[in-house]
Length: 278
Image (cartoon, rainbow, N blue to C red; front, side):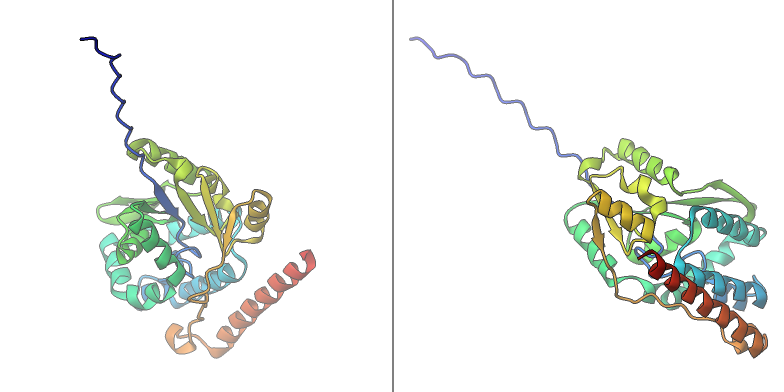
């Protein structure tokens, strides 16, 4: 009996590669700056002076109004690294953890929570990638139930910050971190997602197939429109900043009024600039 031609067995399908969703933190997941958020709490614990707390509040207000350029981010990095030199890492973590629900939780965008849930339900890995210090970012990630974090690393010796920066997770360094994670975890970057508000994260956004801009600054919005990137607006909660009261910082009402005037002036200039370039 003759037999027909043998059919070659079908090759097994290659397993699908993993998909990741990379989230910037400040003004993307939270409607504030994680670097400035705990200034008042550090003051109450005696780590910084009332004057330093006031400077942090003003810096936070300016950041919320107008954002930061790459150069301003670098200057802030250096100032904050110098400020924390000698601080106990354990004390900083304890303060941040104890005040998390007052400082950060109310600032988490509801839309960001929904997106994180969407990606989890889709089986995607969710990663926060931030220029802020890992010691604070990890606590915020814990609040959100996110296991993976890539952030700026500060040097620690004998349980205290030295004021030195080991690695700065900004710009091209973020993009390289994505490539390293993709190689390590076999992520399909063409199918993966990245979310950010800042033009400094264009290199990161450009490494994935699904770049999404969230409340983008002017430069990022322009780039997104030119490259047909998705633009999303997160509004809940509406970003707010709160200046310290004279009772809290122990300074005269005149200084508070002056700082408030500077903040209002910054807002006026930012709005004027937008009108001038519209």
